[in-house]
Image (cartoon, rainbow, N blue to C red; front, side, top):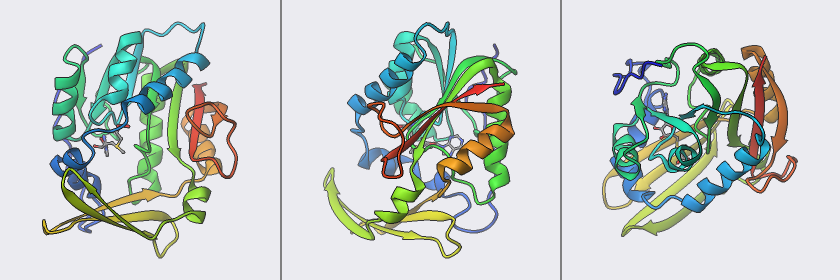
Length: 256
Ligand SMILES: C[S@@+](CC[C@H](N)C(=O)[O-])C[C@H]1O[C@@H](n2cnc3c(N)ncnc32)[C@H](O)[C@@H]1O
C-alpha cells in the first residue's frame, strides 16, 4: 500500500463561517483544552471492537479522524494501523505519542489509499457529520467502502441524535488548563445540526462545532447506500444494546 503523508487538504470553504469550522477548531486551542483526553475511554472502545471481531483475521486498520491518536495507539498495539486526520496540530501530537504508527494528513472525502486496503476502518468519537451537504457525508462513506476489503468491517461511533436533542444543555462553563471555556449549544434553525459555540473567555477567541443530527436510521440508510450492511449496534463502549437513551450510536457494518 502507498501511504501519502501530509497531503495538503483541498480548500472547500463555501464562504460561510460554518463551512470549514472543523479546520479552525481542531487546532492548537483544541489541543490545549483537551490535551488530556480520556485514554481509558479509548482503550475501552477498542476492547469493544476487538471482542466483537474475535476470530477474524485483521491485517490492516484505518483510524479515520484519528485526532491526537489515542485510539490509533491502542489499535497499533494489536494490528498494523494508519491514523488519518486533517489537523496538523493533532497529528503532530499523535506522531509524538506513538512514533512507530504511520499517520497521514488528508481530508476524509479524499482518502489517499488504494481500493480494498483495509480489513477494518474505524471512525470514533463523532468524527463524522461535519459537512453542510449530506452528499459530502455520502461521499466519505462511499470512499470508506472503497478502501475496505469485501467482507471487511467499518465501525462508526457517533452521537445519538435523539438523546442530544432531548438532553441538550444550552450553556455551561468550566476551567481547563487555566482557561475558562464557555459553551453554548443550540439546534440549528433548519433542525439539521447541533451547534456548539466555544468561547475562550478573556482570549478573544470563539469557535464553532457543528455536527449533523443523523439518527441511527439515517446512518444505517447511508451506510447501506454506500455498500455496507449493519450487523451490530451498541449504545455505549461497554457494549450495551442501543436504545433511544443511549449515549452513543456505535454501528458495525460489513462491506458487501
Ligand atoms: C471529535 S475529534 C475526534 C478525534 C479522535 N477520533 C478521538 O477520539 O480522539 C474529530 C477529528 O476529526 C478530524 N476531522 C475533521 N474533519 C476532517 C476531515 N474532513 N478529514 C479528516 N479528518 C477530519 C478532526 O481534525 C478531529 O481530529
